[in-house]
Length: 173
Length: 308
Ligand code: SF4
Ligand code: SF4
Image (cartoon, rainbow over all chains, first blue to last red; front, top):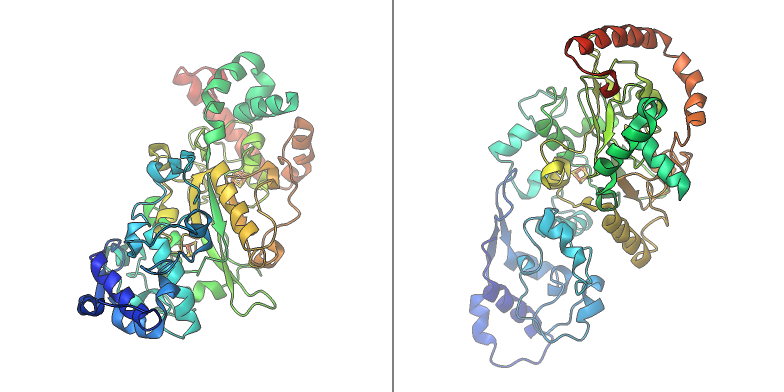
């Protein structure tokens, strides 16, 4: 994902500015990303041109980010250990959620006695689990191709060459 | 403990081996089969996460080089299909299928992926009299078409109706079922193709013990969201694929009457399924005939009977 952590940080600060007494952060507003290209896991579907600006008008930071600078961890899975941790310098999803998932490195991570979050999704899961429920609730696109177009690799795997009865049928309300 | 060991011997040998070859064979394969047992792998399927996108089906078809489907995998009209009054099932062209369930009282449907559950003590394996099945240390229940005689006892024995028969070739009997991507992925430490394709992480792959703990944690921390049960923790003696669900399991088409112990715990249980076997006599006759033919073949290739 080509996302600039600093830019996200700035965006977060912009949004927090309304609720927290802040000083000297105004300059950072200029760094706020308008769009973020999410392409790290792009394989079967193309990259997502994510309008961060638009989403930040529709939702609060903490609706998507477990923690933003100046805000405590919100996710119950995180606060087990991080309830009293100092502010984080990272807010980007990929800073915690791995791109690779379920390979031996992740599978054996549970052997680490200091690692309490045994059930942390990878980045693909984190995105979809975060985005879809809200999209469904707000009647935003929730079918696969509503957010990302299928690539040639995707078409091959989904066998779109086969003539189906109801191609492109929607089953998500 | 004693029963456990006996069961395990039974498991790795299968009926034929444990009954005929007993001690020496059991000893040898015990080391080969059960060293890695505590670290065997599993998958936790979270029905609250599945959105019915069918990516898992598509990935399986590609990974296992299965035949061209009738409809593309992004065609969701399959969820309305009924075959003999039943929702879709695994068949010789699909090792996994996803079905939709409209649960009374829920404002959205649930989806459930079906595939072999890779039982800890598989009935398909214990019921197979030519020992065509193996439970690998990684947890996969794999199948050897070279020794299969096509009697289809495993299809009758499986409590989840998973093994299917490829009818296209009468002379090369072949059971078709999910093998946990054993050859291409699991044995190399990779997650199965369906797990890797799932956008929702509805399928969590890891050591069985670990994913079981994750399931327990999800239930403990979201008691309102899940049924307080992990399907497969004990069903059929425990399975590598396990399920947690926001709706009662029988509402999502799962058989809640499956016994909580291995289906073919003892030989007497095996005998109990014989009446069922009777219903497939024609197949059995073919099987016996093929077995005889195959034996000759095996002798020619200088294989000992003990290996069969
Ligand atoms: S689910 Fe059926 S086919 Fe799969 S291991 Fe268990 S008994 Fe065998
Ligand atoms: S890929 Fe995952 S979310 Fe999609 S149908 Fe399969 S299990 Fe469900």
